[in-house]
Structure formats: structure tokens, C-alpha cells
Length: 238
Image (cartoon, rainbow, N blue to C red; front, side, top):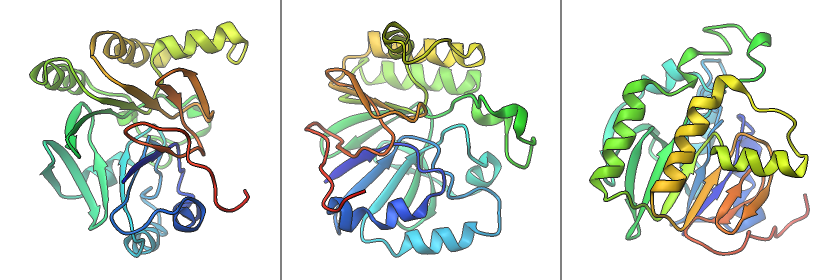
């Protein structure tokens, strides 16, 4: 079965606890909606991947903004279920931007990327990389792939939020401003939300667990069945 959750930020413990906490096991797959962070160009990368390779389930992750993109992009690229991926180890795949995958008879569109509001505290090439925001070529590939699939995808997943989600939060007083540097991506994702027929839209980035509207779900620590259903209850307390 496929599940989805939000930002991990290299917290490997959240992933190793998934079998006990949510029942994930052999044959299951967990999608991470960006800011995976387990490969960050540091000495701990190999140990983290070795730990993940021992898990009984598969991990698919979108890139977020807090990623070491040169390191991720250096892993072997391959075609997988109709789209392009980087394979970090046998059971960990990076779902690339603007792809449409075929999973269990469903189509899943992915668009990673986002803007770091804490960029001023980070160092380029060490803890921040300009590739965090999609390129014009990646936007174009995303549009092309969506057109090729008749502008239909059962599931939409991004790291950053579509503009409509930000508007809803501002109306509720959850947000007080929008981040201008991310506006192009938020607008693109909103155009996808409005013009692509879909059943559910999941995104991360905001560190909130919130179903804003039916089928529009912000993810952080929450775990959902990817193809529909209520949030998965924890088997053990937080």
C-alpha cells in the first residue's frame, strides 16, 4: 500500500519508526513530500542510507528546498513507472520534478522545489543551493507531461504550496504574508491545481498538518493513504 507524509529533514528516526507507529512493512511504500534531507553532502549520508536500505518498505521522495541537489543529482537516473527518478539505494528513489508516474493503476504528478526563507542563515554550496527552485526547463517539462496525460492525474504532489492554500491560511490568520521569492512556483502549482483533473493534492513545506479543503492536504508529521482515506492513526503515542 502507498502512504504519504511530510518533511523529514534527515530525521531518520521518523522513518525507522514507521513500521511500529503506522504498520508499514514489506510491500508498502512511503512518499515524502519534500525536504527529505537524508543526503546532504555530509559524513552522515552513507550511514543514513545504510539504515534506510534495511527498512522493510520502500521510500519515494520529492526534493524540497533543504536538499543537497548536486549530491542527489549525482545518483544514477533511470526510467521508473513512466517517469524519471534518481535511485539512491535499492529501496529509496527521488521522484524528479514535473513527472507523471503510474502507480497501482493511478497517475501521480510530482513537482519538487521550494524557496528557503532561512536562506540568509545558510551558506551557498554548503547548506543552500540555487537549484532549490525549479528551472524554466523543469516547468516546461511538467507542462508537457501533463498535456501528454490529457491534463489528468489522480494525485498531485508538490513540496511548495499552491497559491490557493496560502490564500486560505491568510484568511484564517495562519499566515500574515507571502514569500515573494516563491511566488512563481506557488502560481505554477495553483495553475496545475485549477487545470488538471485530480482527486487529491498533497504538499509539504509549511510544517503544518491541515486538510484545508476536501482533497487539499498539507503534510508534516501526518501520514495518509496516498490514494484516499482518512489520516492513519498512530499505533504508539508521540
